[in-house]
Amino acid sequence: MKLTFLGTGAADWNGPDARGEYRRLTSTLLDGRLLIDATPTVLDMIPDPAAITDVFYTHSHGDHFSVDALKALAPCRVYAHGSWAGEIAGEGLTVIPLTVGQPVEAAGFTMIPMPSNHSTQRDYETTLHYLIEKDGKRLLYATDGAWLLNREHHIIGKKVLDAAVFDATIGDDCDGDWRIFEHNSIDMIRLMLKSMHRMGRLREDAPVFLTHMARTLHPDQAALEARTEKPFVVCRDGMEADV
Ligand SMILES: [Zn+2]
Ligand SMILES: [Zn+2]
Image (cartoon, rainbow, N blue to C red; front, side, top):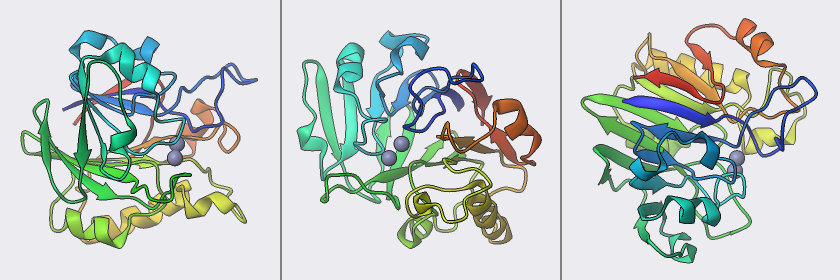
């Protein structure tokens, strides 16, 4: 599967920063056809909007969900957890509610919704990560959310992952930061990787993509790349990767 990281920033990006860097809001395209999170900043990054048939949402936060972006991509199928999918409507949008642990087939992918450790203003909303399978390859898509939930860990079960995309909102210096209860720091991801490698859940050479970086909590791209070791890949807008 081919991943295109259309946006790699957290909600605090609202244009180029003082360093001249810019991260759009986090959105990822799979094989040019399946979009995860149609955000307010995604449209100018999509190579061929007409090719997109399926849009999956992780959650309803304003940096991930945009009904205007969806309408620009219509006609398409839109998938969101059943707790809030009924609130999505628009001409040309076919909305499909998701249930945790129940796979759906879309654009050649098997998408397995998993609960994430995150929340929105909708107290009733279940926020999602995805286990994504195609042609014998498995990708964990884990943003937004801190850590992996026990239930999510059990849905992955004994499956071996070929790649992972993690919420890396917080940088190395997170002492006292309240966001650790809803987003990861890079050190938190390092801890998870150790366990996942030891348990054989993640291939030793599997790339681990970092995205959803906060503008105020990270250095620039070059400095961030210099301070992160393999298997981390620090994403930037427009970056492509094959899994
Ligand atoms: Zn977010
Ligand atoms: Zn969020």
